Length: 163
Image 1 (cartoon, rainbow, N blue to C red):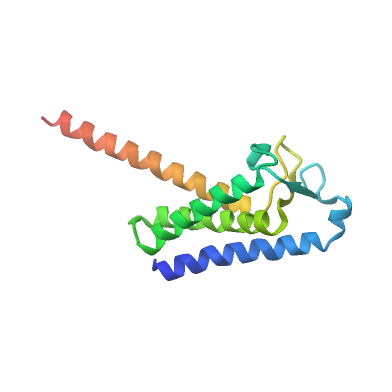
Image 2: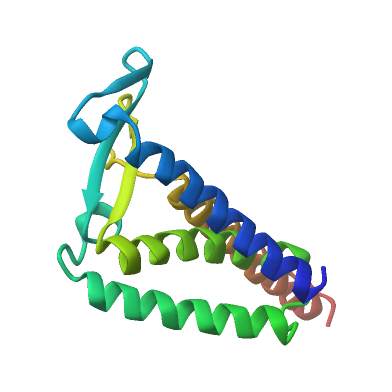
């Protein structure tokens, strides 16, 4: 995948995230109303998150924004320089960066991240569209790295078995 397409996808994910968040900010959710999507399963509830996942670093918006900007810069460099040879790795980085950029825009613009999706079937923090991309991208990345380690281990083992 070309670096231009990758960067365009990162921006597209961030734009989609921002459009959804603008709709949330213009809705009655901001006034405290909760919108049930599926009873006892999923609802929309507005939350202003000044931290990271699971309220880590709560109130450290500037620190999180600086860290996120650094990660975005490194990610864009990796994509533009075409450092990743695997399409799976490229896809995971694009997803993580797209979600990260969406949340970074919130931190800079609003001083908090707009969260609004609440899963009721599990004890889990309220999250947003960008968080979904970050999480899926991270799962793909970790899965790929584990698979790569296992493959290398298996190759090394078969070489020693044959000697």
